[in-house]
Amino acid sequence: AHLRDKNARRMASSGLAIAGTRSTGQDVRSQNVQAALAIANIVKTSLGPVGLDKMLVDQIGDVTITNDGATILKQLEVEHPAGKVLVELSNMQDQEVGDGTTSVVILAAELLKAANELVKKNIHPTTIISGFLLAKKEACKFIKKQMSIRLTDLDDEAIINAAKTSMSSKIIGSESDFFAKIAVGAVKRVKTVDSKGKSKYPVGAISILKAHGKSARDSELVDGFALNCVKVSTQMPRTIENAKIALLDFDLRKAKMAFGVQVLVDDPAKLEAIRKEEGEMTKRKCRLLMKAGANVVLTTGGIDDMASKEFVQNGVMAVRRCKKSDLRKIAKLTGGRLLLTLSDEAEGESVDPSALGTAACVSEEKVGDGELIYIKGCSSTKAQTIVLRGANDYFLDEVDRSLHDAMCIVKRTLESNTLAPGGGAVEAAVSVFLEHFALTLGTRAQLAVGTFAQALLVIPKTLATNGAYDATELVARLRAYHSAAQKKEGKEQFKYTGLDLENGEVRNNVKHGVLEPAMAKIKMIRFATEAAVTILRIDDSIKMSKKEDPKGPQADGY
Image: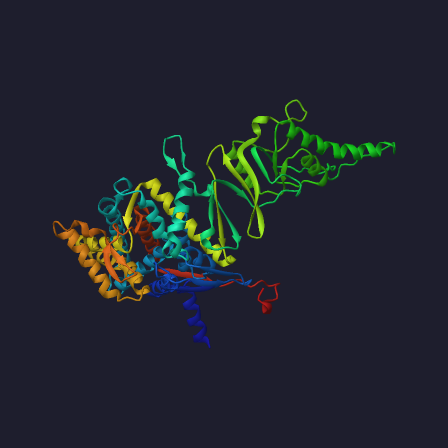
């Protein structure tokens, strides 16, 4: 017993006494790679035009059916810290580019797997990291120089083709012609030019409303704004031409005293006058708005029967409980101002006619089971609305996500003005280029760059596997074409060769309109490498065990 105590004391003094578990070296790396691969395998089958969808059910039982990498990973509650890095990576790609969220995760996991094999061969992680970073830099340079095509060198269809490529893997792939035109039309109409003369296309200015019924092809792009609200009274006009729109952020209901304010009445005869004045205050506001010329009133607050009666008698359309964010958009569109109060500097109340927005027509139309209020012919086309139709919520949600991805791609294409061939062409070309480049290096980085080149092929391989084709043969043919394009003179046009996943062939994807923004590819390689390097740097993991609350009932797991 004495010896045992002595040994325990010696161990405590040499090891780090922590309330938790510590794993180091190869164990940590293997765990991290395992976690990354597990996450990549979940989204792997959803890559490409022949990818399949995933059904996710959360704790409450809400169902999400999607093909979008970022959405899938957001729904998974990943516990593993290295796994969380990949989830954040796909979110980052979603924010920066909007599409390519699946491929970025697959590539990062493949780079990790390849790096882990090198570490097992006694190559130091630092060497691998510097090799990967060098490869990333060269790859991005190569895409910019060799694989990018300027928009001006292509026909007008190029942007629509880029949108169709983005949709090809989604549920609306079969209707991509129809939806690509909607996406491109909407993004082009919200164009704004900033002070430096640069064109910007804010996708946030395009709102998407979903309505049950009819089929996907009955979706429409509204040049203007659609509000998911109804007018207060059925006696109000359904359509108003040459609308003057008042946008309010306060109630048009009988005025009540603020909480805590008391009115002490000494003469009971005055009670009725006080009650009357409460109603008159609201009526005065309504009349002031109409005097300024308003014939459409939109408010975030409520409108009671008395105010509604005033509006009906004067033929004004009034809508209550609108979202404040919607009213801000309408203000931008119609050149109006959101009024927080009617008070003016003279301590009275007044409405400046210049604060009213103008539109050619405001109408209430029946869409699906409900009504929407359309504001058309605004003074500027800064906002667009897409009204989606479809059979059920799951379908509409997925179409919404797919359209958002496609619109982001159109925006990136128009802003960066460069496109690159899709269908695994860029990855195969960069892979062949890096293999040649690796042989020019006389240092240990040669192995890391070579491995990076091999890892890039995971994208064309996965595309082919998902299409139920022989991946090894297709990728070999693809590489042969790209090697010829880079080595042999007169074969340069082969550099646009990518996969055709409908027929299991290799073809010129620029000619067949499979295009993606070059910037999306560059960012994908950049983000994936950085994520892989982040995880590869880790060689020690300490997980603290949870502290037990001495007062808490431990058995119940609180």
